[in-house]
Image 1 (cartoon, rainbow, N blue to C red):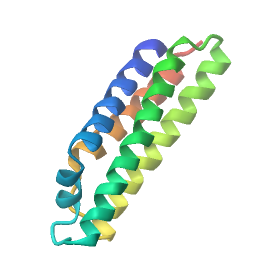
Image 2 (image 1 turned 90 degrees about the vertical axis):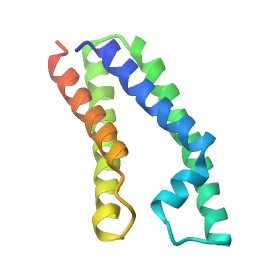
Image 3 (image 1 turned 30 degrees about the vertical axis):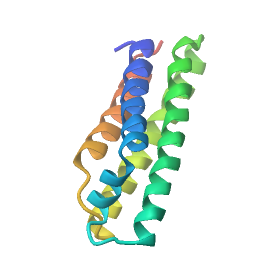
Image 4 (image 1 turned 135 degrees about the horizontal axis):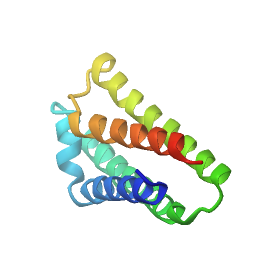
Length: 126
């Protein structure tokens, strides 16, 4: 997969997650913490809004990274993106198994897929 397509796919995936977090934060908060109530729900919803904004900024950066020229520059940015997505995937897995947060299949799959795509694209850059 080309660098341009890889960045486009990762930007699209992150954009979808950001819009989901911004549009229905209550759903994600209650899905992750089903016993939460009162002020805890308000804090969780606020954090989903903030997280949605941060994910949107990552989406914008990934989308604009499609135009990076030079093999060394492309490899460097792809490596950073791959490590970043792997770190997020690892943290989601960690909180799912060790912190008692409800299983989050789609985010684990999405961040893992983006990490693998970035690693594969990095290895193809010449």
